[in-house]
Length: 447
Image 1 (cartoon, helix red, strand yellow):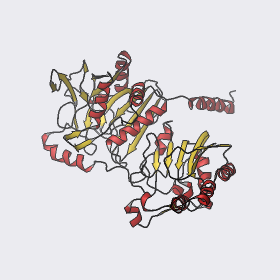
Image 2: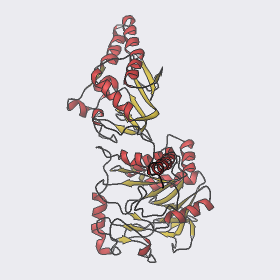
Image 3: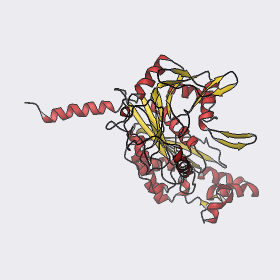
Image 4: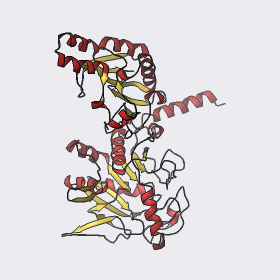
């Protein structure tokens, strides 16, 4: 007779072993509106609309962010995941059931290449351009071809992550994607133009596998634009596919496009649960202010451009779910009573072995400097102790009654003691790395 408890124990072993498996491919999807149903499902293991043929896979998305910012964020997440490939799929792009299999085989056969499927502009041509001499034109995209393209869209694009790492190493101060409008004599540069230009400069081929024919679908009506040869039986969707878009739909489609343009982050729209479920790194920049660090989720109550515009005390995260927390010049703005509670919450959220990194004014050193300082120097030191005023907050936040006072002070030994009290088993004090006036220190605490 089989033993139920032993069977469950074996199943638990299998599940535990699966937790250390990295995704082979990460599907990344920028989303315009959180409440709107995307065309297809790529998240999890059940009900997927594309066959990954046994490859371990992850999924990451972001809501309501401008497309270049969203793509940069998703790329950074994919790089951190340890995957071999990143697969961009648009929320209104419908890929065939075997899309990944075909693109993957093409990518494996053509190293140092980025591979896309055929993706149409709604009510227009395929978003694929080739260069002949000094001309740019749209090629024949009938199935059965492998085309070297000059430009494509990014909404069905399989990218080897090693190439993204090379791009980042080449110049980390240049984003992967960037949109520009009316900059000097430049009328417009799209995020896909920017990305593909960087590929060309690195000598990376951009290949189009025309056996992967995508539908570009209107999420509200199910109408689509695609190659006339498509067999709708090869596509599975969350919403019913209806009929091809016609010229009569143009005004409606144009209005939908404008009305759904994201305005950028101004509320809590970063789906942390999706990152956790996909096994992707979850890193926070708490009290981020204006600083947007690639790969980090910025949280700030007073900055509308933060990924999550909310009070740090209201952010409740699952236990053992976060890979890193950065909090630069934050804790001194929290009362000493709340500071213990906040540090405890962060300790609970961090994974075992993960780190909390903080920088803050060194009250002990500032006080020592004050005794020897000139009148003018004392004004600066006083500001460093008690907090900043108009130079460090925006006119909007001042008008709203938001100041930036320091409500408590710390020095290295007392902060290490507090960190030990809330559960961190080790902490190390190092010199500051951020640009901040006065005497400051950095502490790195390990759970």
